[in-house]
Amino acid sequence: MTLAMTCPNCHIYYRRGNWNKDITKFENTYPQALPLGAKGKIDGTVYEVMGFLVKKEKRYKYTWREYMLFNPYLGYAFLSEYDGHWNFIWPIEDNPKEHRVDNSFVYEHETYQLFQKYNAEVIYANGEFFFDVVDLTDSTLTEEYIAPPFLLGREVNEDSLLWFKGEYITEKELSEAFDIPAKNFPQKRGLGYTEPVSTSFSDQSLIIVGILLCLFVILSQLFLSSFDKNTVVYQDTFSADKLTSQKVFITPSFTLEGSSKNLDIETYAPLSNDWFYAEFTLINEDDGTEYNFTKEIEYYSGYEGGESWSEGSMFGEALLSKIPGGHYHINIYPEFSTLNHEFSIKVTRDLPTYTNMWVVILCIIIYPAVYLVHKRYREQARWSESDYSPYD
Amino acid sequence: MIRNQLYSCPSCQLSCIARSDETILLTCRHCGTVISDNNAKKYSPAPVPEDWSFIQIGTKGIFNNKDFVVIGRIRFQLRNDYKNCWTIIYNDNQLGWLIESMGSLAIFETKTYSLSVEHTSKLKANVVIKIGKDIKVTGEYVEKCETLSYEGEVGPWKDLSTGFFMIQASSNNGTVLMFTVRPQQDSLYIVGKKTDLQQLKLENSIEWNEWK
Image (cartoon, rainbow over all chains, first blue to last red):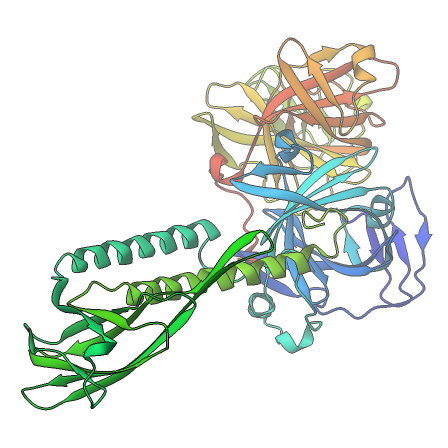
């Protein structure tokens, strides 16, 4: 079965077939992380390391390492390592290209995209091989398609067409499979071209769950809001000419029903290029508790350069949360400009509010948004080494 | 050869029995000498080398709901591969081929077809050709056969000499064609289906305990 092998002493590579007795000498030797003869269990199958190869891409001159594995029931397979990232690769009988459209195709429910095409050469070999890896590599054009953590490769030369499938394998899995400490493996650099973004869910499921959660929050808010009474408990208009010598308006007493609920005080002043300012004190007449707040309203408008403009508003709003039931009145300390001489307020009890809902929705959206942005950044990094990047 | 007929080994006189009328040769289970109805000298097998095949004579399995047992093989040593073409006999005494290499398995019928030389010349790796009306296959590999050897009872393989090119082509539905091609000649081919270990439910195969 072994058709080519290397001499452990002088490291020459020689063929055993009667039809070819050529010898290949390599200029350098290279260290290997998995020794020849090492056995490891991958996906429940025991493989033995039969050979080690260092390959160099002919155009861009980068190198990577391949370990030829063998199992008598399943034949051969490979472990490929580049920049500390590993893929377990095995030949398949299918011809996935049948489904190809341009540079991508769907195979076994995954969309594969062309990542690279290359010709390579073997610059170092060690061990034994079931075929002439040096000559075959030299004459083969390889296309690799990825759908992380999977890859599909297509090797074509004059005499053969071979498809193989691969899957990213972590250092930890490899270390456990071969009982070799992970520190013996080459250090990882960057993102492996088939390295998955490590999540147990798909983008689609993340988006669907996010939308469902948002819908749940909105429906819950609408349901709970249906119980809000939204009652106007007091409203009035105040004129500057009725201001007392203490410069204060004191509203009549009004009653807030029920337990602690929110209270909305809306202020309106008929402003035109003017401002209005007031200090408010809501006073609980039963226990003397005071709630202080201020409100400043500005509204300006004009016509300039052929266009009318405006800024500010004639309305102001203060929302006080958790105001207990009881009897209340409001002391208002207004400051009028020279132009404006009146304002009005409207006090509403138990107003439906949506602030909390938006905060919760924001929290729900943040994770998927950050995740998707991060993922896109990582995908761009992954494809930065490809001539076929969909991000270019 | 004739089913259930006794054949004496020309070397050691051991009696051997053919299990099928389609059998073209036997090897003596004692000394390995070829026994044939025809001129046995034309078969000059190399001894079957030890390989890592887990199938052996006596291995049993099931294909298309029919039980079969392995009774012999031809081993083709190709330039960058090998093929073990195991002769199998079904429980209805029909023969078939279980072709195995490096974990790749396919079952073939023994019926041999012919392809004209002009079609044969188109057979290459990565080229799609049409066979008959509705079979479209893609060439997967072309390998020259350098040596062959056999053991046990060998079914009706038509070309038992070296130097031909073995070409495998398959369609996406698992149909696989195995051609034997010689330059400037019509080629011969057999038709089969790709399969796997689980489907064949093999028994009495070699237990490679160190791989468990």
